[in-house]
Image (cartoon, rainbow, N blue to C red; front, side, top):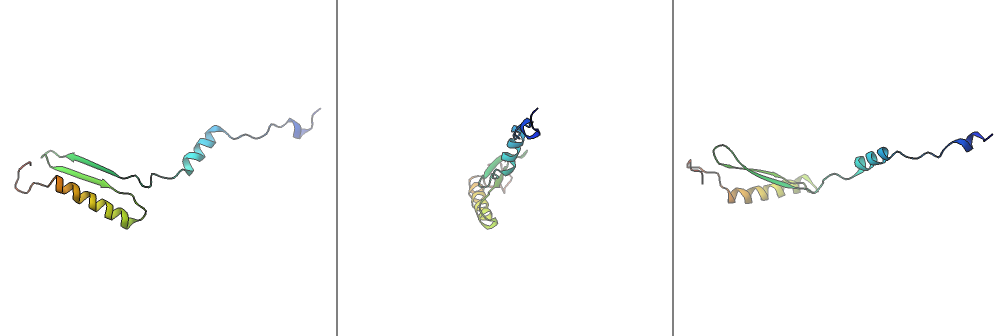
Length: 83
């Protein structure tokens, strides 16, 4: 008869647990920024900028600079035209 410690299999980690731990501990997108341009029903360009930098101040400055650049390319029509 085998001793109790000899009959136990070594503990192995589940692949699901390993996958969960990798997902839970991976860094977030962090520096991924994005920009979206759409036209509304009136034909006006709508700008959406998401900036992710190291600090809120850097993110805000980056988003503002990109927003201003895009608004200069696609100005909001003030005379009712769709240009």
